[in-house]
Amino acid sequence: MNQQLEALIEKSSNIVFFGGAGVSTESGIPDFRSVDGLYHQKYDYPPETILSHTFFVRHTEEFYRFYRDKLIVKDAKPNAAHLRLARLEKQGKLKGIVTQNIDGLHQAAGSEVVYELHGSTLRNFCTRCGKFYPVEFIAESTGVPTCTCGGLVKPDVVLYEEGLDEATIEGAVRAIRAADLLIVGGTSLAVYPAAGLLQYYRGRELVLLNKTPTPADGRATLILRDPIGQVLEDRV
Image 1 (tube, rainbow, N blue to C red):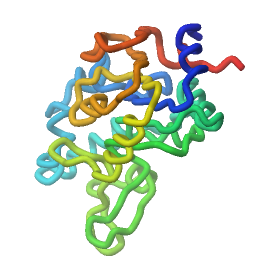
Image 2: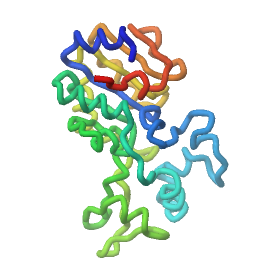
Image 3: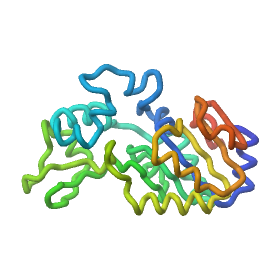
């Protein structure tokens, strides 16, 4: 627990947390860009290619093989960072979480105001009739998952080449613009347009919790390189 961070949290009443893959690594979910992340493993195609809209359309079965193997993480549980953020929301201090993650762990920890920029593996829909399917349906299916109507069941995850949901973006911008403390954690701020949301922050205090440098380091009030769960762990 960092005293300077805790002092900033204590004096703030409108906190927003902006997070990336590093928030969930302590829950056993690999990030994409670390040395041992998905982007550095060997596949027939690079992960960026497999997770693109074009690949999804042209090589649908291969997409789902990778998706089941790497993006559906079974038995993952919220870690100390997720739990602390949920507690801050219940205390009325944290007003929203803007996340690039698709694992649903913030909600599992109890957070209610979560803007999922890239969607969620927990939501899946038939592209023909719109019927909802849980994550288990995709995980337990083989080949290309299909609905009872015969339509293809697609995860509600934003692929490369696809646009972000406008309502989600608008909510995230409103939250960030109104914040008096923005805590950015577990993201290299390399993925756009998500990383561009920081430009809407008007507050004075910016905290960066990331193991490696980011383009926003020069603006930061406080930079911490320790694991996020360790930094945010609530010992109260």
